[in-house]
Amino acid sequence: MIHWDLNPEITRLFGVLSLRYYSFLFALGLVLAYITLKGIFTNEKISTEKLEPLFIYVVIGTVLGARLGHCLFYEPEYYLSHIAEFFLPVRKTNEEWEITGFQGLSSHGGAIGVLIAILFYSKKYKINYLWLLDRIAIVTPLTATFIRVGNFMNSEIIGKPTNSNYGVIFHRFDNIPRHPAQLYEAFSYLLIFIILFVVYKKGRKQNDGYIFGLFMILLFTTRFLIEFLKINQVMFENNLFINMGQLLSIPFILIGVFLLKKTSIIKNI
Image (cartoon, rainbow, N blue to C red; front, side, top):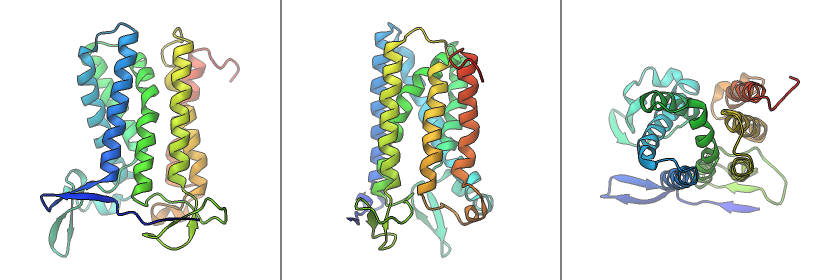
């Protein structure tokens, strides 16, 4: 068994601000995605001048969508009565405000936020929406890989108990060997990134929306399946047949199937 008891905090800046592995890896994933996307734009002989504003739109959409998604999908009762904590990295405990960082981000909310942000961007800069989504879809799993490694560093989003010899004991949670579900997802997302990148390189003439549709099917089907190995994130999920992550994945998978059908990749659905 692997024993895991890492302090999720790297250091404290000025004795107040906490620098965590999760935040560092999240930022690193975004930077690597930006570099990869810049390479794609350069190879297609497309000006990279509009890449920086695209990156800003995507980052804002990701963070806001992920934060609001967590608050509304997983803890609506709490956050609707603590509106300030929707947008501020603080939490009120014992009548005092504590800087906690944004503890609670939803990948499904982040996906919705990115879709909306890119829609606004495409209208402002008059760029084909599906063409943009195809390119963003290639690099998104790369960022997701680092985010899930960050979850592992935080000892969060842990798996169900296992007797396998690759089980991990997250001592910050309990002393039971569990599936390292975060790493399962991280490796899966890295593989999806490689698949999408190869598909892009091998077939430049796909209809717009094909790569994005394939991304939606691969990533959210993976998420749906790995959820069976995770413990529920919030109490109300114990009363559901499938958990919230799986419920939210289904519409994304269906959108992916629709896009593949629309682009004539799947013929007989």
